[in-house]
Image (cartoon, rainbow, N blue to C red; front, side):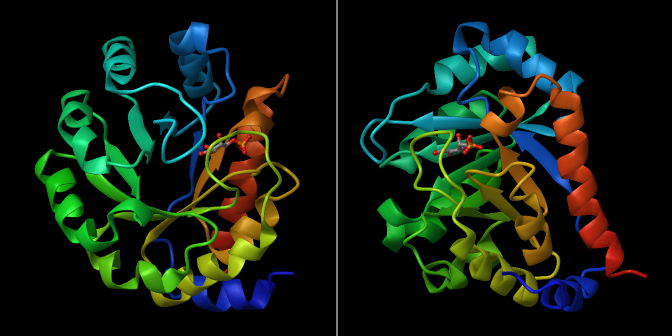
Length: 241
Ligand SMILES: O=C(CO)[C@@H](O)[C@H](O)COP(=O)(O)O
């Protein structure tokens, strides 16, 4: 169990500086209706769209790439797009994703361990913010030296590749460590996050919440998004009173 006092103590140092953001994953949506599904999520209160890009190599699944993201961008010109690059060669897709006006380019450090800094620089040069993602088996020490080159750290709470998996509570110490040491950092969690697991994420200090099936499968997306937000915001607020 994550200790509330641990979170409160550490998040208090952040004051109001970190903001809660809810970013639904469209992975398990009806992708034949990608635009309509995306717009519906935004209309129901999503702060950003988390677009899962998979290459069938880094993960055993395939989704879509920059041509689809570009098309979606023409239909939705103003929303904040994050692409979660579950790909073996993240450097390869920086330029086209930049041309698609992606806002946040999140890539896994595992396939580029010796080149993380270079990839971060290229992402920024392409006009995007940098997110660094860690698979469950990757320890926080692998990313420590790169945190100052990133805008956000994504702690995966399932093995990347598929939606609808069980939340890994044992990833919360990574989130706690990051929040304790980087009070102003955006920390994202992704995988199995929904109404039953949001408390653990919020108490550990996550402020960017990716949630797929819990939102997509709900008959009331607006209520789920609002409830996730309320839990995270109340954790952030509690430390300020
Ligand atoms: O990146 C991934 C899976 O690899 C995630 O974005 C999931 O797609 C989120 O879906 P749920 O676990 O919330 O259903």
